[in-house]
Image (cartoon, rainbow, N blue to C red; front, top):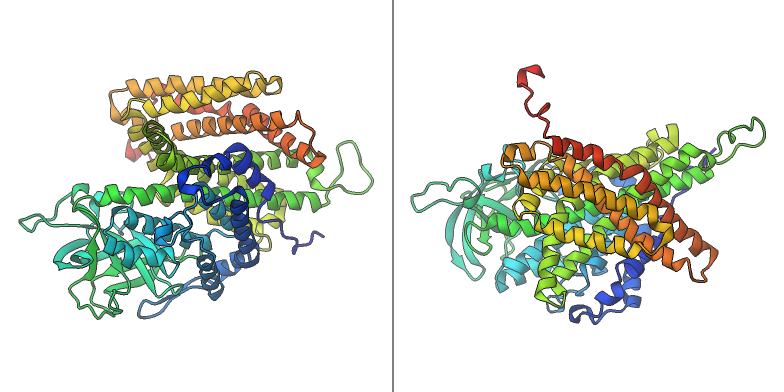
Length: 612
């Protein structure tokens, strides 16, 4: 009988080291003035700390926080599992909330690449607990970017220190992704040293960490509509502004913000998800006329400001999908190596063999590997672009990185989320009946990841953003920049005989993409162009991941020419085989998706509603 107590490693550190040091060249990044106080050795120490915390403190919360969900009492106080509270506070004490911020603000001034890698290690242990960090860092970064110095000191610095947590309050019951339809109101209420003060009234829904007992204070960033000079609500997105609304006011009194219910989730249960009321006069010393909030920046700029946090959160969602898939792969690999079942084909007697010996199990494991490690590569590449956007030597390089990141962000969010689910489905299948039980963690990882195709805008909305805004709006300029990087990799691979089939497959896939992009750009009917938007991110996501696999295969193939140990040779040969498998099995799928795009078939879009 397989030992249920066997626990696969949270991460294979060799994978992480390869991606950071050999592929993404963290050493070159550390030579930039912003990061010059760090060394490769200090980066390794930070990641070792993250791994220690993940294995020792976070991994035990995975199942516990799934079983013992957050609770809410009659006055709206939300409690989370004490071990989650303790774990989040340990992350704060370790300085992980401060990693990307300026030293003048108490930050460590680390590259986003390092921050995202550390986050990924934590998320491999459990997705819910580190997500407090994702929201808080994004909240504080937005305030640092757009807030006043007084607002930064009062509301961002406590979050950087891990003394307060942050949220983003966008959606409402009647307005999920359609933010132009929100009804939360903001009315002027004077001015003080923190800026223009408003009274906020309304209801927000689906608010992750909207209330909890991890910290005494929670800093809400709230989108609300303002009135014009005639007292009429400004309709659409132009009337939306952004407000800082703390749970506890600077004078120590309770603001008029209250959790009225918890949403009972399929997975991802360790972090509470709340319905919040602002300004209902309940349990507040600030009076019944509304919660007190301070305007961030200028009126009417709420959505453009919030997009900074949303886009960074989308990269975080990508990581939150990649790492459960990666952990599920390690668990399935561990199980397959230890589970004895059946005999090789043609042999009817003798001792049973580990199921990893069976061809179909090898197939499923290799698929898991290419999806999980491909997703992780995509997220870390995007994090590297974020660093380039802010620290590249020239303005042209910074602008190019910004444009590329904008193009890749909807892919970085949606591709890992979609294919992690496929990977985790395979993890359950490899475990067989055991995988369908709660005795093994892969079923929870499957449930936890299911949210990632939904929150921070669904896969379908990300697809419309990619096609409508990121491709058509700039005439394909960012896509051409990306295509130039792909061509450069293919050119480098042209001298490597072992990579010829992989290079040809990547070249062919990107040739097909170019043709499809030309069709999308030439289409004058916006509705027709978007009618198959969801097929395009699948295609370009696969093409990007295929390119990233080829880029990593280049590094591995070169290293095999040197004198290296047998474990190192196996490690790199495994990467090469994964690249080949993705080229042979996954890249051909691109043509099927693109056929939908180029044909512009309306068989689904034109279907009359009554025919359903």
